[in-house]
Length: 61
Image 1 (cartoon, one colour):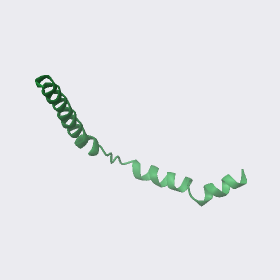
Image 2 (cartoon, one colour; image 1 turned 60 degrees about the vertical axis):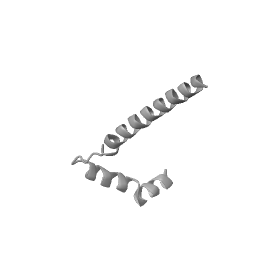
Image 3 (cartoon, one colour; image 1 turned 180 degrees about the horizontal axis):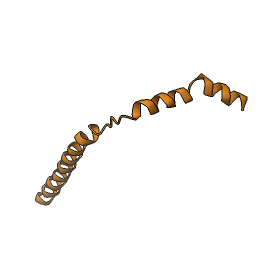
Image 4 (cartoon, rainbow, N blue to C red; image 1 turned 45 degrees about the vertical axis):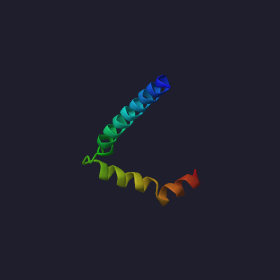
């Protein structure tokens, strides 16, 4: 009985430690967005490439 409680306590401790580590890492990962000055022009180029002109060219090919 005491051995089972000891194992359960150890598992709970490991689970709580894992949860704490996961929550500690989640904050910086969530805030790791980038706002580089070249992203907006590249995004507009990407949208224009995926637009109707690209579909017409794809049909022609």
